[in-house]
Length: 276
Image (tube, rainbow, N blue to C red; front, side, top):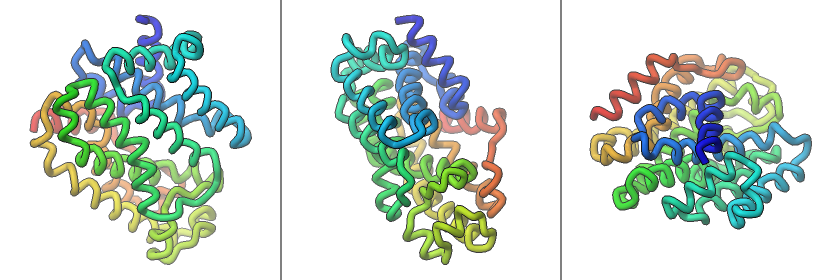
């Protein structure tokens, strides 16, 4: 299993720098398991980019369900699947959580608009929030059970920041993750957002950033009450506030250029979050 976990670590380092930074704060005896969770997230999040039509993507997501249901048959030839199956067994993680994450990823494969802010919260709950919770379970099972609400809000804030950072990519696909009710309140149509019309799109970006800040405000001020053993699971979401600040500052420029945070700033945010 050492080689399979090493592949997970390599994948996280190259494809998800935010979570890679957080791994430095994970205890060494839990780092491989957390890396397997994050590598699984990377693999499933990029299914859309690896297929030309939705149906092959659905088949790929079903492969993951089958591989986790019968790891001896399906996971053995795939390092991330093998590491994840081992992690689920070692830490007695709920398989249903991974099934729900895979079900939510089906939305990524299609160009249907996000119908409402509630639908986006539900999507984030099954993806980013679930990832925080299962990571917390790996770190400290008993303490994780007390942090479901914080994980829920943290995952939504992280997802909203991610949606705004991915606007250039989503626009190129004609894919709209900004919820319809937020677009309507901002006086921006989905087509105007895709075309990159600065004034209405700028209003939509500002409204979306404000929505994200609401969820930041619902969990981040209480970071000091989250057990220190669990905080590494929340570190990727701790960057959301700074991303949202940059996005609000950049406005419509976010349509073409993702907001970024420098590695030293990320390291400082992670260190400060762990110290509180």
